[in-house]
Image (tube, rainbow, N blue to C red; front, side, top):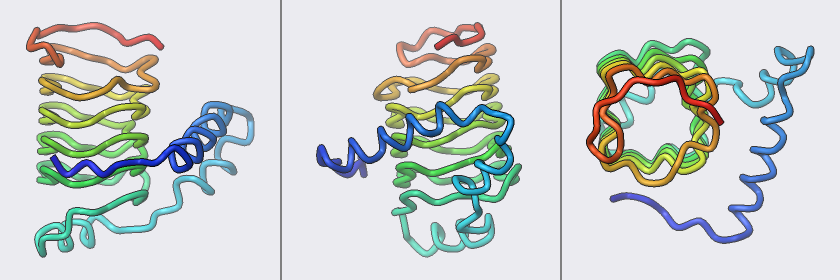
Length: 164
């Protein structure tokens, strides 16, 4: 696994950001979201850098509703990454580090086997026929996430709507 250690200071910094984001659902949502979700990388650049062997994509932010259908990011470090309503249908995210990531979007048939999802925000995410087998940690927020015919961490195939 390519997971990097996080010291206590970095953990507290990320938790402070999490608390801010949890309180963002206000009438000023669009204004505030521009601060947190300003694109820092294009899909094309991400694919090119990954193909060149780069695996460290800490705190990247992809464009709103980015189409990542079929993308292979196996083993990537996506700590704190922001996939703002992205389409990750058929994506391979096995063994990725998704701690503290904002992974809202469509994960239909996505493979997250062995990924570290600790404190990732999956609120409103669609996991349809996805593979979450052997994931590490727990989603920080999964309120309203849809798990439909999805393989859970323990290998059970299940359907339910997640609640925080």
